Length: 273
Image (cartoon, rainbow, N blue to C red):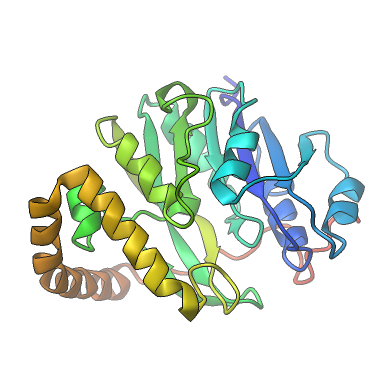
C-alpha cells in the first residue's frame, strides 16, 4: 500500500549556500510520494537560478513578494491538497528517510506527529541531539514543552484554515500554530527526523533578536493562558528547565544517540545542478 501524499513547504530568501543540502535531503533520500513547494520572495544570491535548475518533477516554485515568514508560509500552504503537510526552512534538512517516517506514523491517525532531531552548524557538522517534549501552551510557556519544528507533520484537515499561520507574528508563528492545534491528537515518536541548523545570521541565532522573540512569545502565552497562568509558568520555568536539562543528559547517556548522516548525498551535496 503506497504511503499517503505529503507536501513540504519551504520558505527561502538568499539561502543558496544551503539549498543543495535541503533539496537533496528531500528529493534523494525519501521514498514517499511528495510535493515540495519552495517560496522565494526575491533572492538575489543565485537561489532562484539554483532552484530552477534542480531536476525533480516534485518541486514547485512560487516566486512572489511576501510580508514576512508567516505570510510566505501561508502562500505555500494555501494550495496544498495532500493529506499531510509539513514545513522545513531552506537552511535545515531531513535525515535519511525522515519524511517517510513522519508519513508512516501519520497514517496511524494522529493529527500532529512529532519526532526528534539534531542541531547542526553552518558546515553541516552535528552539534547535539534535540528531543521534543510533549506540547501544551502551559508547558511551552514554562520551558519544557519544546517541539522540534523541523520534525513535525500535520494532517492538513486539522489545520485552522488554508492559511494557518498568524501573519502578525514575526518570530513565533510555529508556536502560535501549535497552540491553535493543542486540542488535536499528537503522536510523539522516538526517531530522528530532521536537522535544525543554528548559526549566526539565523533569526533564532542572532543575539539582537532574542529580546524581541521573548517579548512576542510572552504576549502569545498571555493570550493563550491569561496573565495569571502565564505568570505562574514564568515562576516555575527555571526549575522546569533544570529538570528538562537533567532528563536530556540522562537520555544522551542511556540512548547514546548517533547522528544519522546524509544518506545518498555527498559532502558537497550538489545534487543535479
